[in-house]
Length: 639
Image 1: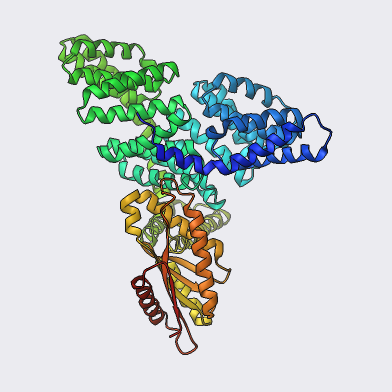
Image 2: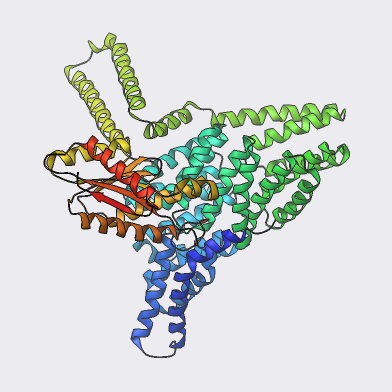
């Protein structure tokens, strides 16, 4: 497959500036390494510190900056403080994991987990334990992994929210690898809540993707698409190319399963471009397999077989068990479609000999179903019924892992956070009814209980009701927020505007992004969503504390500015326009030549005219004039 040049250039632009700075600082250190000049050593140490901070906050991509990260680790080992060295070593451990250098990672972890100073830096210790748990999970060393789980569980209660996010990410990875969807959903939900509270965008993307993958495994494809897109939106706000590529792949995978082949292919190509650019064999294998699968579904069997053969070599060389087996199964399907039953049967027997290598029960069951059909068609009755018997066993194991009531409860728990007041009220009523039903059931024995027991029951009931009231207030606040841009939605900003005008004069402005349909049509809705997020970030960075804004609808925004000075209003929107240009330059997939502008109409209230409805109508008329006069301008008037 050809590498997507535009994608590569986007990544290059995103990292070139910080990389140049870091190279300059490191070069300065190397040129004075034999000198006793203290200020030069401090400068180089600062450069390493800045690099590590940028990597940890997802402002730099691991794999595209692997040389700098490795150099920083080596420098810290020779020259710098123990605390900075341990932090560099933890980042280097994650780099080794992403590079799939598992033997080196194992030796690295053994060395540093024995370091006596490590417990004094709890967050760094947790990063090492996260890397260790991920490595043990991949290597299927479940007994040792269980010991690490216990260590993390012991530390969880006394950890800070940021440290808890590290722990929950480690748990989510482990439970995904061990096919425990119930626990995957549970820790992903807990982690997402903390990530939202901490405004940790990258971690939000991580947990959204885990939730999306879980819904996909549970065959709830529409929900899988929703959360895969949320994960992608989150990652596109970072410079983490690997997890952005994985989000592309996850979204493409759900689309593939519901047979939206062309749309899926777009995302697989984006993922493949990154994996090829950093020579990541595992990601390359998954992306190539998915594309080969699309070619197969499109009945392009020759090209599908060629790419599958190429991918089988990659999967074998990189020792990617599941992908090796999946590619072999795809090849035997192709042979069957080509009318080559002998080749299909031979490949089927090879896969069957490696049945224990499948990581999930459902994968084994799906393969055995194919084996049953093939053997039956070839009149190999004994093999066919043996495959059927084993298939039923693994289907049962899969349903035991995925169909428990607790999984549905967790799904409801997450959906409640996303639904509006009607759903919240239904959930509230449901809980109250359940509580009342329990109380009614217990009436037959309450008379036997002491006054103390009765008092405790009443107190528990009151606490439950109080908790429900607090939850309703929390979700009411969420109902006023636009899920994409995290600014007020139409209802929220209208409420803020009305309250402001009750107290004082203000300026009401309607803002509309110019030619936004062109952006969506040219670059796709993902880039369009990123532009909306960029505008919200630009507005947030400029507005004063007394100012408010929200998404009025589509690409339209409503602003409430705590000023009646025309020049101040114009200056505010000029500053937002400049900030918008800067934020849009960071959007992957948007050409540098594409300039995003907006038009605005602003109506200034007076003591005799504070009607929100009239001010909005006036602002809308002014916006229309701005559009008619050529766009990219602000039209301000006092009624």
